Length: 179
Image (cartoon, rainbow, N blue to C red; front, side, top):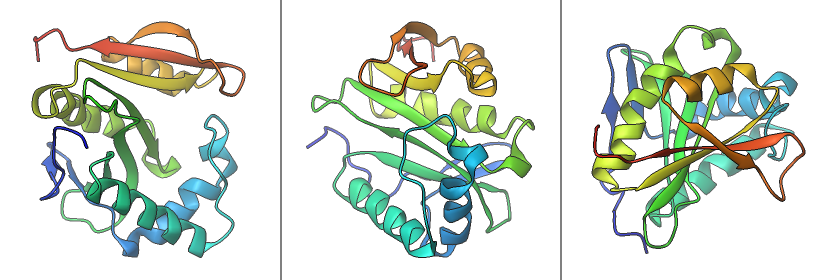
């Protein structure tokens, strides 16, 4: 069990976004994100075949949150109920010292700074609230948007990802107490 509890769920907010728990009502957007070839071309996840696959994924992330295995937020524009994307910290070490950031954003919201804004809330949460010492992010060498995003936060390329799809690289940011 991790040294942090995700109950009650830790909602976060930014200037334009509310980061809150994904709901079963978001299954349509989850299905789009997990079935659209553009969305999954750089990640190693099973492709959603139907709405039931999306609902199963929501149940899976809910169980992980309830069991304190990971934290996963849905991104919503302030005042909206439409899911724009997701951001998470998962693959958390048993001692709570390190985790992995992951994120997806529907194509219509990409290139507008939303994920940067979300990470501006999530990274400090990981370091200050979860007390992580390090956050990793796996991205494909050809995923230019993700690479630029990680560089904005001073993630540093660590190594090629072993055991993952060819072209995957590991980027890391250390908690240096500045945040």
